[in-house]
Length: 113
Image 1 (cartoon, rainbow, N blue to C red):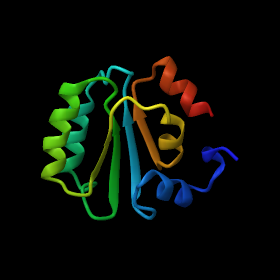
Image 2 (cartoon, one colour):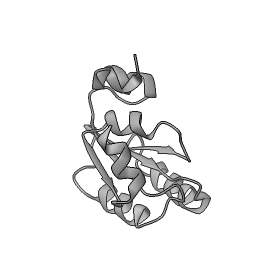
Image 3 (cartoon, rainbow, N blue to C red):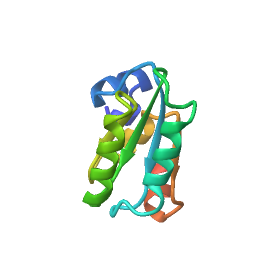
Image 4 (cartoon, rainbow, N blue to C red):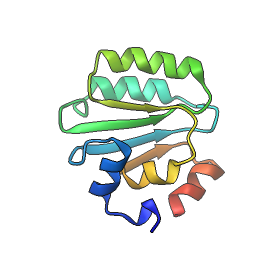
């Protein structure tokens, strides 16, 4: 059985996420492009940043983005789950309630499955 075939709660548990929190996935390209940091910063200041929500951010190979998000994450404990370049985007997306990303071929392809 593929991980994406598991129910969302079980999948979250396997991925080290909170099983009951509303989950947002933010991803760009493999380079972590786009306005990911700006979006994460806005979400951290919004009503989303409460103890009932969590945000998955895939930074790709963008170390600068990862560093900036780690600092943002320190002031928002439990809100962000940061990932570098990953091979399990499909599972991270399946574990999420909302997927936000640039409508490029990779994220569209992963969204379909």
